[in-house]
Length: 374
Ligand SMILES: *Cc1c(COP(=O)(O)O)cnc(C)c1O
Image (cartoon, protein in one colour):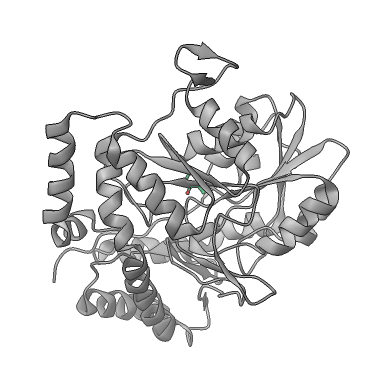
């Protein structure tokens, strides 16, 4: 059996090597390294795939969030509601812009924030909400959008982990994750579901005016070359990454199906183990399993992790520390303790999940986990 990895980027590359190599070689030979035709093609392809009116590629998912915040015309001290159980980038960009990240607890089953949780945190100063579609499954996006519209708030979806997931609107229409809020943001970090071979990111919106603003901010605040309307940033997706992403976007749904198949096998093996809670699947979203994350309910999460490591099975804790306990945010955090976030940080464990897992590897992992709880 091949060594088990959290994600197998090399194995996946080898499957699509000839197309990827061809795309990279095209960029090398036509030397359009920045803003080449591959970038425009990718932007168009992603708009079509997502059903988004406008996609604005940028340098990474953190930049995407920052550019989104900058486009909303917020002023220092304005409050932005974020989950306390998420990757640091979500809150980081808010703090960087002298806005106030207001950290809220998450739903214990879905790991995501809900309209009810958000509503309790809204004050006179609240201007925006950032639901994170964590681990590959959408938050209650329609419910959150409705609340935001009622209260005059912006909604930015941090969709770095859930690109490709379907969200089921109450009307029965399916839309893609990231397209329900005013702005959606994505990361193409190599291990993400749509991963480049370096850094990359994108913003998407259905609003033409916001799209123009996002584009301008990502391009030094200029609409015309060397004429700058406002202070912006330099955040670009380079042509080589775009060429790779053009190939990988064609496989996104197939790759998601392969991840889901691994998750299904894990679920079947773990659902009868009392000390484990398998990932909850909400009715209104598909789950593209950026992570397969168990809750270990008997306090033995760390012991399980060491046991797996001894047997050659990697696992990762996403995330070990709530945002409000991070040294960087301790001072400005609005809370010191949120019970669900606290509990999740102590009980979650993410197992290897990727597109190249063999049945033998899956069986070895499920057997080893089962053995631990015997
Ligand atoms: C990966 C990730 C980001 C940041 O993306 P980068 O491309 O690494 O900057 C932001 N938010 C979430 C939830 C992520 O998982």
